[in-house]
Image (cartoon, rainbow, N blue to C red; front, side, top):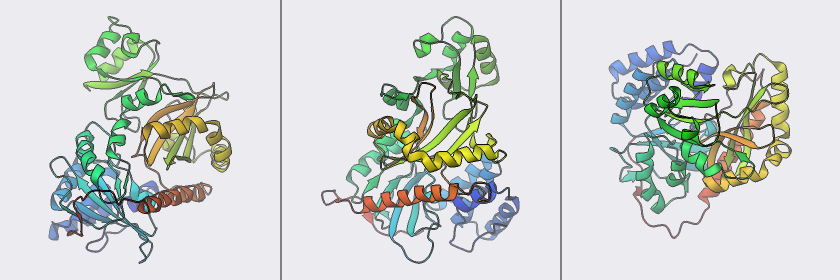
Length: 419
């Protein structure tokens, strides 16, 4: 059972995610943290852990309230990544308030390593302080969303003059909105990424009523379409709509003011199964994180029946084993173009293959969860693959720390602050 840590220590995301993934009941830990906070109300670490627990048990509103209280107390947090006392590298990650999909889960990528990790939370109202912890590399962990665009805009000027190496520059992160990423990647040879548009509710209503054609919104094409509310993730509010009547029904059950809309691309393979790949590009090199295989077009790894099907796991294991000279080789040019056009040091891709062999890109994002917490008895092949990814991420940080930054101007003093 996961227990509350001692003073000045975080349990952290990696450990709590593992506990939740193993179906551990986190409510007793939540109660223990609440009891601790009754006598230590300013323990920001306990508040942050409680916020994570609340998110993982589904109480999002209270989790965000508790997180806000923690961040009012302190902006800086020392994350539990070190394997021992030896520190090879110090990384400062800039984060933003929000749920589990608001930031790069860098703690999961560096767990049990020799990299010391500090997370500094910023908002438009609380930007980077004048003094920041000493560090070798600055990593911009803020994920792109409408809510975080102002934060990324603020960070652009600072990142340009920062006296340490900066990974994932804010101006490149700003390109990851669904509509912008689609416009950047859609024309690339070997890539299929249908146009994605932000559409107001009233415009969709006119399509649903027959007053306008869907082609007036998306350009040449026809139903079916994919609709999701702005800012949604993990399939929340995501639907495939077959015609105007279904669109009217969708709008009747959703009160959102605006949506992302795109044409649906049928990516079924010859056996009738859909296969969705999660990749990460680290310094431009692709790595596969998981492959969800399902009869349903909307694949989430946890509900794709991977744990229940030895055949699916065997296929995923083979894909991981042969990835470099199969999938990665088939899409070498397309992946290189994605790297060139996005220009990020680290980015995740959810993608598939079209029947005619193109790389179908669903999403590019730096906040996708990448982890090694699947049960080893069911997924033994995942451990070496994930550790390969973690090693590549660590190498990226070390490579950045060796970069020459002699021509950089002065930025806020890299000096330790209370935390």
